[in-house]
Length: 258
Ligand SMILES: Nc1ncnc2c1ncn2[C@@H]1O[C@H](COP(=O)(O)OP(=O)(O)OP(=O)(O)O)[C@@H](O)[C@H]1O
Ligand SMILES: [Mg+2]
Image (cartoon, rainbow, N blue to C red):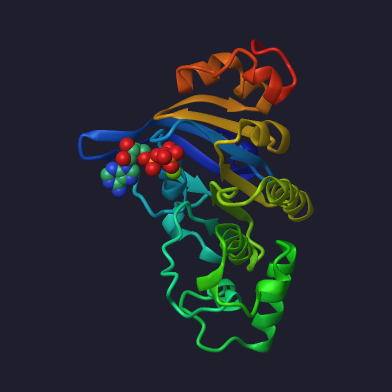
């Protein structure tokens, strides 16, 4: 890989293999994500999608191979460059927290005992970005799944990260809310030039909103522009089937085989 390619890369994976004991969740995954890409990761349950993003975040160590994020190993990266929405929210719902405190916790490594004026302004901006400014002073213990998801999105955005990593961000959000969320993610990517990495089970959203798709099932099955990566061949290889005869044409407005 030449220097120009390296500068253009937000994420580089070379022969990435992650094993938990005998079982390897990822095997020999190599790919390069350019700066400013909006990448959707699709694959069946247990395909290694969450493991892939946890490795990029430095939360899981590779068994073999290399990971570079903005040309650095994940553990050497400035954490303020990354915003993350995890798949499973570990927050104890009985914890007496306000939404603005949860968002402000994204500005620090510790829970904010007192939010400063400038922090409150940034928290307000982040909540407004996800259409949730009205939730700021409400207790998270009473939130619906979709409201909590929006607050986690605001938390991920609060530091204007250069890389946003989202593990199934549409979970709990209704269809109208989903459309807003994808527009919001696209808008953020276009206006900030940030790179977005999103796990989704929604092929249609991947097809219509992302610039690149990763099709994964332990190994890398497809990577590239949505039309190419979401081909019938790749989907069949990853999922073993592509659903009903008409699934692809209904989803993508084209015939299944590409
Ligand atoms: N910490 C861990 N210890 C042991 N096995 C793990 C661990 N994390 C993940 N695995 C295993 O690795 C495989 C991939 O898990 P992962 O969570 O990455 O899948 P996924 O594609 O995100 O699935 P889903 O769509 O269900 O969220 C699974 O078989 C899982 O049981
Ligand atoms: Mg997962």
